[in-house]
Image (cartoon, rainbow, N blue to C red):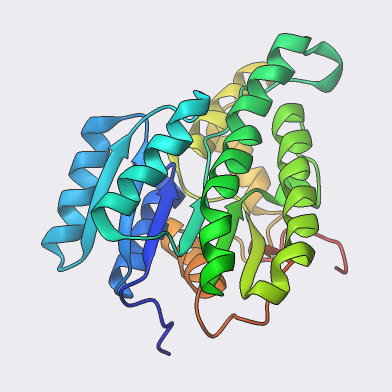
Length: 262
């Protein structure tokens, strides 16, 4: 299937590794011109170079989106490099683990600056141009926790749900302008983030990461974790031309893990 992304300009945040990197790879393979962004400049430079070596078109911008000025700087960079932004894939790292009753206000504020406000700032910056041109795709990478909260991840559970609510509301406001807004909730995926969660929870529960992983896999109908490229394949479709009538949806890619009917 031709996803209709050739020549489109895309921004992918959190793109130095894991799911964000896989999404950048997938979009570049479809012919999009991709700007990768994250805080680690060394990893970004290597990722962009590898995409270009594979005949893709990529550039990178290193910056911390917790800083309100970074969103403007990132979009301005993308526009200088490749032109108006057509695709925004907002992907963020995870906040610290912790139980809801034990977290102080500073932790909640920091989580909002990590997970929520950068999405708003980037969206406000790219959306006017998308609406004016009559075409745009906005996708936020969230988590299965928006369907089923995950134990000891109160910050992620709450703030990713806030992003989902924002996306649903925005999708109804801009659908008539040719702009789609969706969220993608990855299930457990073989990334460094998940590895660290196993280690953290194992220490808290006086067990081993391997034991926790096996317990988890038994709960996933597919009996395995996802590969980052499997998540990225769905992301690429959600921002594609053929997905023009798909908006306001929270799509779970989880091997059947979540139990809800919808």
